[in-house]
Image 1: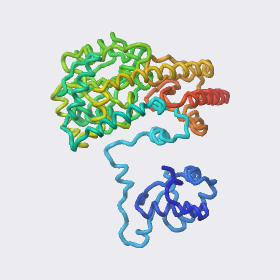
Image 2: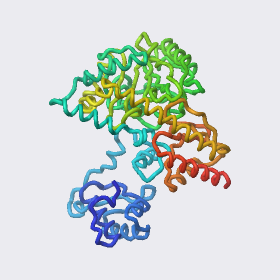
Image 3: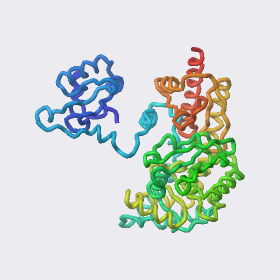
Image 4: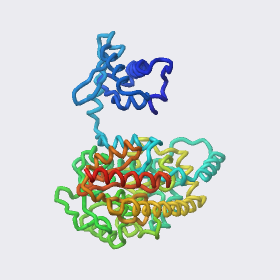
Length: 482
């Protein structure tokens, strides 16, 4: 929500509106002592004024003793309307905020996360299906059906709503996985699956081997739990298993994470042979595998190879799936398939964290599977992604032929774009943002060499994709000429 959407007295001069707004935030305890207030630029943008108006407001608040500018920290709250009158000061929330176990996201990742909700931006980065592809009528129909048949419901059993796990057991057979409902855990999206694994199966100091670059580097799921990420190189067939080398101390304290289908961010599809090699390396070293397969149903050209889990006869693989990429992230429904003792352990941890995923969402998800609507929806999604992929590759050929190189993905959401001129990617990101275009730079995925962008063709409209790529090409040429 922007500041101007919140309650302000619009009859007052703008600088007084800003003062009242900040005082209200401070007085209500929303911005406690030690909080950094929004930048002058942000306030000017949200109140539709120039920065001199903001400076006038801030100077008055400083004179009142409520805020002060601090070197390297911006402008912070130093008092509130209560502490100015009272002897006891408020707790130092800033100290608490910086002391939490969960590490904060990198500043650029936080900025991207906030900007992804800005509908005024051209979203060239967003890993989500477009609203144009969202099955609104089918979702209304299914939700209506569920609501008509609904009875009183409370917490589900620890592993999740049984009819959904039964439906998933049937669905998983279509991709070669034999899993009974008792070996399936319903989670609130694939990210929660990783959090549960980090809490329930690994100890501090453990090593997480993973593809590099990887989406996991933009998060701090494992690092916040005191674990180390060790990146492994990839080629056009996926992760290179011969680079897995464990020390004696790592045995029993390591796990391998991989995203074999339409890898995020590179779009690489792991070959069938490579999947066999990875499982063989895992079995030889007794290294468990997390197979994150949330993009597999988004194939465009042909069915991808069966999951690694299908050839796992010894329980090495924890298989993670989700409806967030294929149907709706708002449902918050995912699943983990694994050995029953592991699923029992993770289900106990889940009960301790949230006492189960949404009962309503689980019922809706079950209806999508059992009605046959999910497979019909996937066919429509693949058709739309094929159109979008063709459109974007054509736009890239027209506008970026001499500025970048790329490989056409066989499915998923992303094109991994390597920018050829030696330019500042941070400057490109900032310049694009001022032009109303949001980018995801390769650096947030630990791409250490070369200049890369993860370009999504799944979310923005075709018109915005065309405009965004054209504007991007102009910015690259401009930066390269300096």
